[in-house]
Image (cartoon, rainbow, N blue to C red; front, side, top):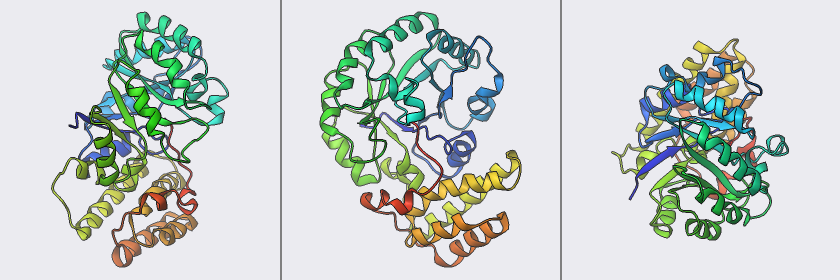
Length: 339
């Protein structure tokens, strides 16, 4: 049974503009976790840091804001501001794998320190008016670090734990550790959301058969590659391949124009779309070729010329296999998933 499908927070991609335009063309997601907001230092918070989760920008899809930080008092202040915006639930990022974050003991950098996480939760939970969930990896360097964290999580009234079964140092290499995830399911008392490498309906079916107790699922890069995936998992009405290409083209044009409306200069919207193509090209035959052409485009005019010619003449819907999704040719973009 699927209780909920979550859109993963992918920094540089799944901002409020992407979420809004996505919901106009595709179905399947019930909720989105927004890319993290780094908790500002001190007791002054500029309202601009909450633009991505401002209620007026998030009408189409319910959103859970995510905060990244390690100072309990600063975190509690930011959480209270989000409560004032109407958010009764927030998420704490304990999964970001990137060294520049982890070396400051934020994100996955906190995972080797259960005593610090315990002290943080002990101080934060009584101070915030929101319900708190956690998004985590199974460890920073070692796969069993989460087992020392499970008793800590179980001591607090967390709404759910989102688990990506890789370590932080793995980044996105290798395979999710499903054996450890199974152990985690037996160790944590809170509802668990599975996150990691749901790339097509077959991979989802394999995971859901292995973990029948899991009813909450998060999809990140798989849905960027194939935006129909959540709807396919939900068994929404099927589109034939040419119909899918037409929808993706309308989605692309709408999204690009939406970025052009809010971003300054011609380069920023084009760069944002190039990042999305790093994923989306994997759903087309000869995707590597179009990706190379797109990344070489220097002007918006040249970019649109390449894209229009591709959709007019060359586009064939053919989502890549999971192995091909990890090919270095497809990992040349500027965007990255922050979990």
